[in-house]
Image (cartoon, rainbow, N blue to C red; front, side):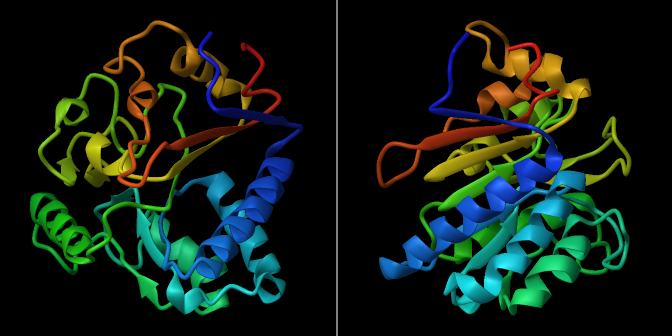
Length: 246
């Protein structure tokens, strides 16, 4: 078993969310203390909802200037802007609007782009035009099948290395159309934090961290931070059920 740089096994999803939230505000505050304007890629899902609530609770005492944090998403559902399928909708409601974040870059919705290919191209252009060489932090969930962002096992997007963002159609999880950052884009970061909970993901966690395996079967294996500024950090935050097969 290949041990990642840091593996944190916690009791339950609530403890995962609280632990990550505390570490998040510390990281962002430290970056701003160095005079940096950190770029962060958010994730979605149930654990992200709880995490975002926990960050918002800590925001008043954090000392963070939230107008100097730049937010992105590792993937997003190509849907109407007010669709509950959109990761950004929940993140804005429970976190970003609560703390007063102003630099929030959403993946184009059906209102902003005529099709999912155009949405991926526009998001690539937006990220390229932001001028940041790397993310400070990318946060990722992982599915029971080992997918990360919207890079699914057996899908051709897993092999794309010449684009920032790609369209995804026929997603095994609804809705069928999505936009995802590619591995080269996700890995251009100082840190990756995985947030994985539940015994339904225990096998995928084991496969992701095993010495041997194929990224086409378990895309999470393709996440290997390669920042411009030096060595990358990888942290897996797991609850006890998700870690049960390690």
